[in-house]
Image (cartoon, rainbow, N blue to C red):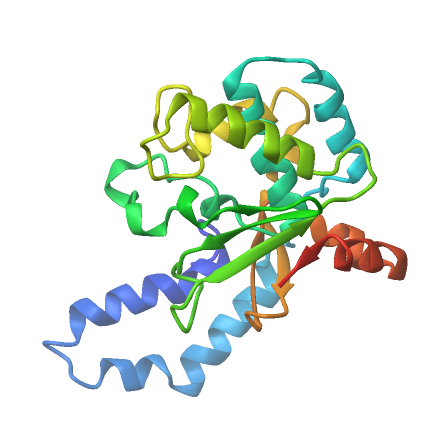
Amino acid sequence: MCQHINPRSVATYLSGICNQLEPYFPNVRALRKSPLVTKTLAGCQRLRGVPTIRKQPLSRDDLCRVVAHYHGSQRYDDRLFVTPLLTGFYALMRLGELTWPDNPALQDDSKTTKVRSVVVSNQRYEFFLPCSKTDRIFEGNRIIVRAMDHPSGPYPHFVSYLTSRNKRFPLSRELWLTSRGRVPTRSFFIRRLCRFFPPSTRASLCVPAVRPCRDKSHETIVGATHATSVPRGLTELQTGVIW
């Protein structure tokens, strides 16, 4: 059974099978949880389990490469790419919190960050992140990112992007907008990221992390938690973002 599919997927297949058989066999779910079935699944995972392949997270040096490449660029979409990249890295945000899915059926305007929630001061900027499927209490979060003395610091890039965005689309509600006035999609971001980093690195958009204020696990945009693996990195991140 496990020779053709990943053993971790077998339980999902069985759940679907039980759903189809339950009207005809009411006790099918009890049989699914029987010791014979559960121990068989556990044995399959041990015998034919596939090890987890973890991608290399991006580092501050990687961000500096991107910043240096787009230094001096006046293209609006270049600013749109760099600003969410840096913001998402230092704020430990998921890619889905900064972009829309490629599938139009999954795009939800209520989950997009609105420009009216942005507050910019001399030392930091902040905006409100609406609730999403990972927000258990559905109250959203206010993201506050401080200015920092580092080439990859997001503050000047955010201010530059916001100024350009407000000139182009003064009446639009969304914070993140492409040059066409649309919310950027996941593919918009990934295509540009692939220009700088190989597949083993760019897939680090799915590195597990924990947001203290949310008290749960999620996926970060570019593996910023890699910097928190040592005390120095943790201190740097704590001084750069507030939750």
